[in-house]
Length: 148
Image: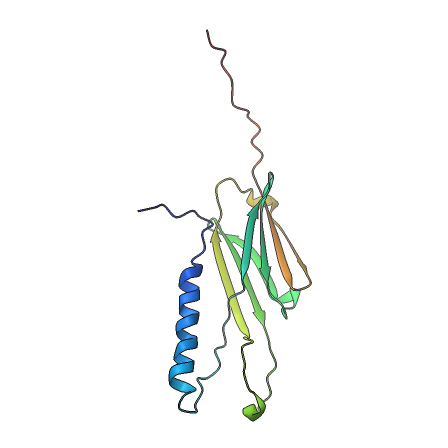
């Protein structure tokens, strides 16, 4: 069994769950003229990449007020928490299709040992949360022993 990298996200499972929900709506509820109640949860999409000095995580969280976002480190995990409110009309007879979700979100990612948790910084601009995860600065260089 292949070992799971700590940064590997369970996106295939999330995508499968979303697809099953969509199919259930389409095949069962919409066919009979009904609709499931709105789900009040959502999951922001993430990108993660590495530079020479840091890992960088970017999350799309449009419509979220920066005061409603919290980035913490808990037990070796990076935790993103927040809340998005989408105002919907009480009268739903005018809706043709509704996909925007509101509610709380939580994303939890295991930090590699090479990340310095004391230097993590987050910025929020234009609906994108950017978290810089600096790598630890290894002050000891590997010692080279000359061959005899």
